[in-house]
Amino acid sequence: MNDLVIDIKNLSRRFGDKHALQDVTLRVPRGGVFGLIGSNGAGKTTLIKHVLGSHYAQSGSVSYVLAIVSYSLMMSFVFSNSAISVVPSLLRIDHWIWPTLFMAFLLAIRTPLDFSLSAGLCVFALVALIYSTIRSVIDRDASVGTASLIWLVGIAFAVGLMALLRNELGPVGMLLTGSLVGLAMLPFFSTTAGLCRARTT
Image (tube, rainbow, N blue to C red; front, side):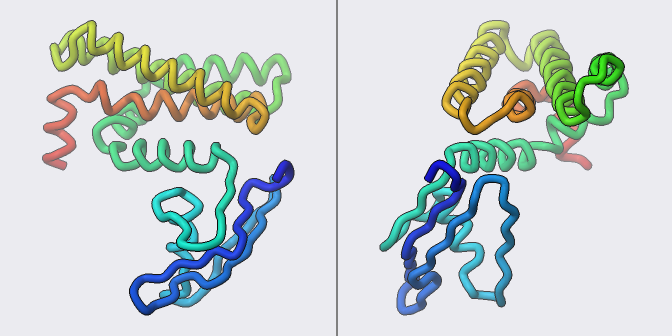
């Protein structure tokens, strides 16, 4: 499976008398673009749930690159908590100063655009995370010990994920992984005031 990111063999799934998936075989190569098209009830969502690991195969097998599941879970968490963490950070102009300067510097020294943008996003996540940490400690929504523990777990998770996926990710992928972990940590530093604003909007 070295050249495949998803390898599904003879996958079948039933819900009562209904065959949601019957003997499905699918191979998605690395770097390939793939779409699922079908009518309602054809089994598209069920197939994706098997790939993401929320459903297990009743027969057949599903093999995938760990990055797919890791990124899917983190993106799901980030988007489900975006109202209390990511959106307020995106709307703060002061959070964009350092990322913009850093991207401008990288582009000025002729760094490739994809790397520069990924590095800028990583700096943005770091700035937003540092600000949110300080704000939540000052507002006494988190103690220094709790904040330190969240940072420790986040850093350990990011380093572990990068080490596990080092063969799958290039430099851009590593930066995006760090950014995503940082954004996933943001909701843990949401202040009481931020939560109240999110509930009333």
